[in-house]
Length: 198
Image 1: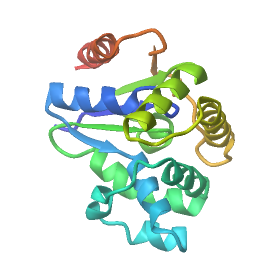
Image 2: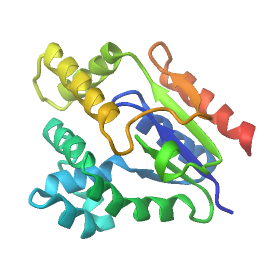
Image 3: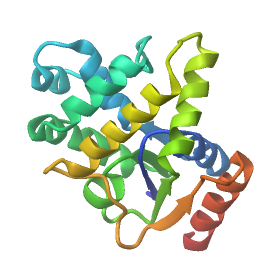
């Protein structure tokens, strides 16, 4: 039976962590849709050609989590033709047998408006920037906090302001603000939201 959980929200709000935990908890397949855009951005060249030629193997490439690739992903995601090329891949994944969790920025609003569960994960820009800054530090990447905060705000503005599929919560999404929540508490709240619909 198909059962789709759509998780949206801005960068570093905790979408990926919560999505992976939900998929593991319920035995659902998991797709980080941001990786599709990161893989396209990382390929360089013509973004539309890269999107049309994307394979599952491309999503396992090294280096997709760098700040440079994140910025490239946000830029290519603003191109309507690129988004359209990647929609079918995501829709097919979402309705697979056994359930699926997809995280991104337009899953509940554009890709899977019929999803059984929609969750919008958010946190303040400062909290998200601090998380990203710590993550970079742990990887040995030195960047000033102010610079990371500026990048987070710049990406929010681009993702929320784009004409095609802007980042926003679906009308029927469960709102989950992780600013002051532990990972465990955030995951528990998400599990409750899914349990309520099963």
